[in-house]
Image (cartoon, rainbow over the protein chains, first blue to last red):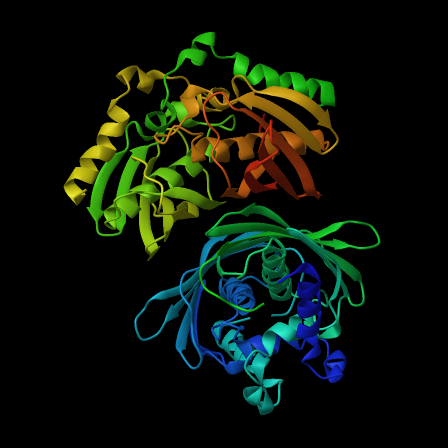
Length: 153
Length: 153
Length: 153
Length: 153
């Protein structure tokens, strides 16, 4: 692909959507990610969720979008911080993710978030996405948060 | 928040959306992120974009969602790999992001993706989001990809 | 500290050593890190080690140096790749570490390295350092390697 | 290599050193890394250093040890925090490094550390190692620190 073509291809990607996208309400993103997520277990410092990979979160390779995976590491990691008794989930300092396997449409995925450190100002969570059938790890990430700003989940 | 309350709050987050969400088409996610993105420069191994923070990508704190930032690191980083002449953008191995500042509704943001390494099988890109007015860095991330699987941007 | 002072302080740090440091042999670094490490368990894809924090690896705050911790994530992570049957430990693509707690002189530390993904070309390992007495996590890291170059441990 | 052999090989690595290693003084590690480092420029929030890859820091593949690179990201990154006017370099929260190219014995390497964020409690630094001759990037890392604990460089 030459550079001019690449520019066009990038710009046209967004154009597949109707312009009503511009009027989507504030905070549309978060529920778009978690819609359909089932919370299977909440205990101090640990949250276990599951979901079936929905069509809307697929990438062009037809598996779970890496950005959606990162968003789940963000959101479910924050939930584990609440589950550790924090009145706030804080602000993200760092998120990192290793992508280990692809998750395809309708695959059952479980997400486990576990607190690694719960301090007064810093919390660190490990988040793992696994295939429910085989236990195979799809992605593992860590989320480091600064516990000073208030933010509802 | 007690654990039972947390479980309810997590599960209700998705319920703010109509169930039509379930019928959103495959590949809805990617354009949702890049809709409105302008490609300002494409040169070998480097891509420069800009956008105004849209309502739909805000988090509950009313600034750009960390998961959306991660998605932009993913997508614009992949574009730089194409811009370095790769016929494929490959599959993600690792994404990491440091969150440095908040970007609020309608702020002008520029994204710069630059190739750090362009090998035959491994590419690494640095991606930075900055406030256009002040140059202040909002987030810096790196994206490591394995260049073997084919995937359209 | 003003900038001139900082420059001096940085340059003098190395000068606390005799110039014989310059004649230390190739490969001095690796054994310096692992000297005293006991290998408690090796099984497919998993290695468990332990050691007592030695004086030589302390930082100026008198706890285990962050660079030494990173080196252990590198070395013990590579051992787990051998333990998964790889004929080579490969070349490092990415190492990341979250520092969670300090480890002081003579503390008993255990290190567990577990394979997350063992592909033909890419391996990813999770490495955790814990206090032996309490199980408290000192550091958690991930090590991603490219399995093509040959390298003895 | 079978598992028993691997255990032996790991344990014997440290044994190449004389037992006098056990009596090396506290804080031996830091100067071992920085001995020979020249500080070429210190300005607010930015430090530029250079060194010739010494034999003692080579790995078994005869290039700069990944753990030594991580240590340089730690140490030179901390120096940039001092250079930004902080009275303390703080405690490490997170270090991540992408390894991009090998640096061989006696190669001239330059290290540039630049502050990305300098808050009251959190500092983030980008650290890059480059080949002096060609400008080729050897490694890029980020170092996130919590600025509360006092620690001399």
